[in-house]
Image 1 (cartoon, helix red, strand yellow):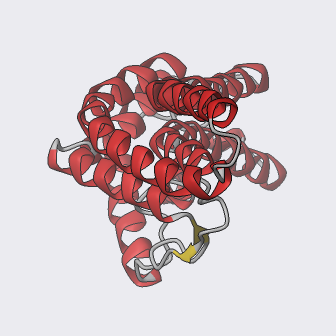
Image 2 (tube, rainbow, N blue to C red):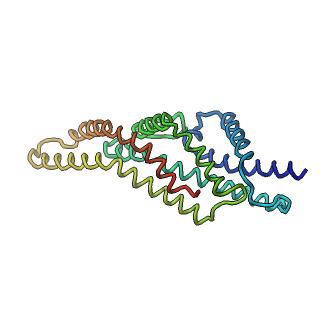
Image 3 (cartoon, one colour):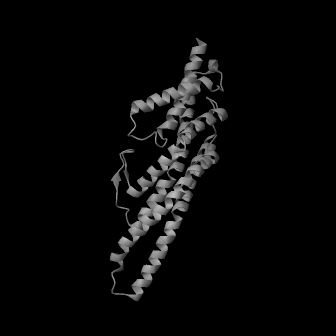
Length: 250
């Protein structure tokens, strides 16, 4: 009887961590994926990891209140892991949004059928390209590797301190802004040169309507530079795994 209770408790703790992790995970958390598929994936993954993960506490000495606290700790750890991955995953989309604002397309919004949220078209395009490259490079295996490493370092029943989790989330947020700005930096420099050229042109030919001329020039330059940005998106796929290895509280 004790063995069965121990197995059920281990499975519940593993299921809690994996479900919290997958709930905020990119791609898997899309509303376009049926809920039944998400539940099935979480249960099958939890069954596998519950059979191989060690347990760090004595089940016989655990009361009901301690079980609730253990499950809450597992959910907190899983959410922290998922948030770190999601923030790093959003770098390409953030770079696309920066470019769109320079192009004057900040108000151009569409409904993203995958997430069910409003999004800008260029940012969604960059995200789709990154996801295709990420999955084609078997990047989804990294998600399972993250779960595996989390149980190697912190078995079921033990998690990092809140300070470690907070440092990981804050560091991922910093990486998201810095890497997104770095991806968009060449395009920002090109737009700066365009603004300088238009300012000089406005001084030379005051009769010219610079605002009317600048709109198609900004859109055209943005699309041209966005095309040149695509190879750098491919390079960020390898950088993504490197950032996860440094920032995840494992």
